[in-house]
Length: 198
Image 1 (cartoon, rainbow, N blue to C red):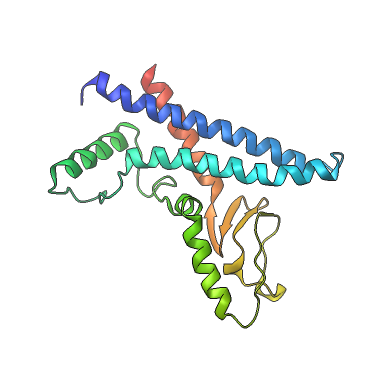
Image 2: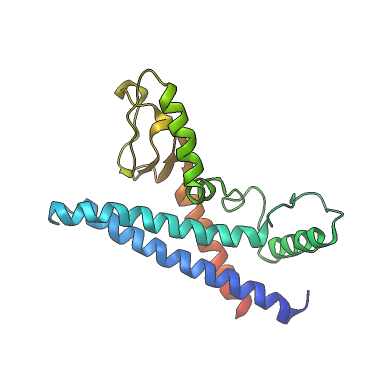
């Protein structure tokens, strides 16, 4: 890949990483508001959806970076025979080498972002399961705090969006995602992009 073509990709990765970093700053700001007992309760309540907006924004930008390194519809380890897929596969390989990204990497999987982007499908599935459930029908969403346990009488897969601040994990319907690892990986990519662009 020629340097000027390479720089187009590097600039896009840098832009997406900077946008993710801004979302991270917003996240920290709203988490600080929630933690500050001197802030009126109403303001702290207003910060809760802002926390999840910032998380979703950061994940969207991280996913955009991910798609440049691991193109959609292309297995990262096997060169496809389809010419257009082959070009995307080669681009992903080239950029991962350029950025010294080893596998596994926190940016590689886009499952959490997919849950949030396809939230309607997750709600449909939850609604179907809730209809046939005989116990634990409560649905919980937008939780910031300690992890729930089954002993609390809530089905863990009925807890939609939950951010465990102490663990720095995002929990979606009982599945844990290391949010801070994603955020840190974005930071590393941003630093490398800045180096590459001089």
